[in-house]
Image (tube, rainbow, N blue to C red; front, side):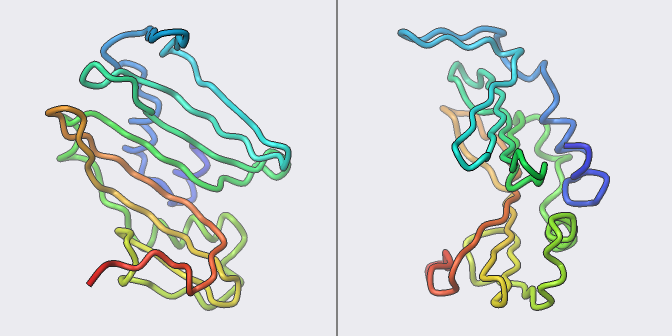
Amino acid sequence: MQGLVDCGALPQVWADAALDWSDTESDYYEDYSSSYWLDTVYFSFDSAGIVTFRRYAIYAGELRTAFSLVMDSRTGQVISVWISTTEAGRASMPEATTENLQAFLAQAGLASLGDWTARPDLTYTQALYSTNGQALVAADCKNYAIADVTMPYFSLGITLCAEENLPRRMT
């Protein structure tokens, strides 16, 4: 996470929110046959070597993801990061910028594709697309609701995507 901050892909305040272990209403959650210690980072991996790290928290009485980080275990390359924080932090949380995206694709070694173009027609707050690489790097900084509480989140990721499959804004 700190590597993303150091290269400019992730604002420090969002990394701090991801590592804020006091943001949950409880330190334990149990529901039917599932139980989660909320002071633990959980991980899962697939046969291709993709690892997902996830931390949970209780917001408005419900179990939610506080942060998720997906990376390639062979290279250490971060593929995506998703961070949520409490409503109280929203006013001070920075929006995603084109500079964040450019830093993210540079640290991924993809700046050399050379044709990254801003795509305001897509459903993301910020998006850059490479026709050469058929790759999309996108970020969102929006709110979602849990009961009567509004929660801000920051999402940043890269994916392969043919241009005809890009998620376009409805007009």
